[in-house]
Amino acid sequence: MGRGHDRCPRCGADFHCGMADAAPCACTAVTLAGDVLAALQERYAGCLCVNCLSQIAADPAAFLAASR
Image (cartoon, rainbow, N blue to C red):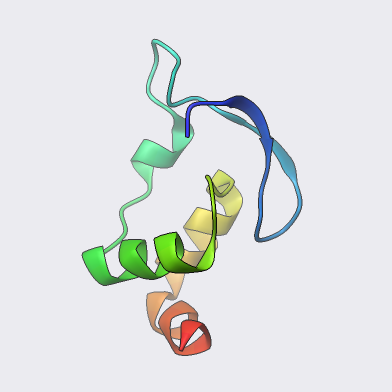
Protein backbone atom coordinates (compact mmCIF):
# COMPACT_ATOMS: atom_id res chain seq x y z
CA MET A 1 0.00 0.00 0.00
CA GLY A 2 1.03 3.58 -0.36
CA ARG A 3 2.75 3.04 -3.71
CA GLY A 4 1.17 5.99 -5.54
CA HIS A 5 -0.15 4.90 -8.94
CA ASP A 6 -1.33 1.34 -9.08
CA ARG A 7 -3.54 -1.06 -11.00
CA CYS A 8 -6.51 -2.62 -9.21
CA PRO A 9 -6.01 -6.40 -9.07
CA ARG A 10 -9.79 -6.94 -9.13
CA CYS A 11 -10.91 -4.83 -12.12
CA GLY A 12 -7.64 -3.73 -13.74
CA ALA A 13 -8.36 0.00 -13.45
CA ASP A 14 -5.52 2.46 -12.88
CA PHE A 15 -5.90 4.46 -9.67
CA HIS A 16 -3.91 6.52 -7.20
CA CYS A 17 -3.26 4.87 -3.87
CA GLY A 18 -3.18 7.75 -1.43
CA MET A 19 -2.14 5.90 1.73
CA ALA A 20 1.27 7.61 1.70
CA ASP A 21 -0.21 11.07 0.98
CA ALA A 22 -0.81 13.74 3.61
CA ALA A 23 -4.56 13.65 2.97
CA PRO A 24 -6.51 10.47 3.71
CA CYS A 25 -6.82 7.97 0.87
CA ALA A 26 -10.28 7.66 -0.66
CA CYS A 27 -10.43 4.04 0.54
CA THR A 28 -10.57 5.20 4.16
CA ALA A 29 -14.17 6.33 3.53
CA VAL A 30 -15.21 2.73 2.72
CA THR A 31 -16.17 0.65 5.76
CA LEU A 32 -15.57 -3.10 5.54
CA ALA A 33 -16.09 -5.74 8.22
CA GLY A 34 -13.11 -7.68 9.55
CA ASP A 35 -14.06 -10.90 7.76
CA VAL A 36 -14.30 -9.04 4.45
CA LEU A 37 -10.91 -7.39 5.01
CA ALA A 38 -9.38 -10.79 5.79
CA ALA A 39 -10.86 -12.28 2.61
CA LEU A 40 -9.54 -9.33 0.57
CA GLN A 41 -6.04 -9.84 1.96
CA GLU A 42 -6.17 -13.56 1.15
CA ARG A 43 -7.49 -13.03 -2.37
CA TYR A 44 -5.59 -9.94 -3.59
CA ALA A 45 -2.07 -8.62 -3.25
CA GLY A 46 -2.07 -4.85 -2.87
CA CYS A 47 -4.76 -2.20 -2.85
CA LEU A 48 -8.08 -2.26 -4.66
CA CYS A 49 -9.57 0.85 -6.26
CA VAL A 50 -12.27 2.70 -4.35
CA ASN A 51 -14.91 1.62 -6.90
CA CYS A 52 -14.23 -2.07 -6.24
CA LEU A 53 -14.11 -1.50 -2.49
CA SER A 54 -17.46 0.31 -2.67
CA GLN A 55 -18.99 -2.55 -4.67
CA ILE A 56 -17.76 -5.08 -2.12
CA ALA A 57 -19.03 -2.92 0.77
CA ALA A 58 -22.46 -2.72 -0.89
CA ASP A 59 -22.79 -6.54 -1.01
CA PRO A 60 -20.24 -8.14 1.30
CA ALA A 61 -22.15 -11.45 1.46
CA ALA A 62 -21.79 -11.94 -2.30
CA PHE A 63 -18.06 -11.17 -2.12
CA LEU A 64 -17.54 -13.60 0.76
CA ALA A 65 -19.54 -16.32 -1.01
CA ALA A 66 -17.44 -15.88 -4.16
CA SER A 67 -14.24 -15.97 -2.09
CA ARG A 68 -14.91 -19.46 -0.74
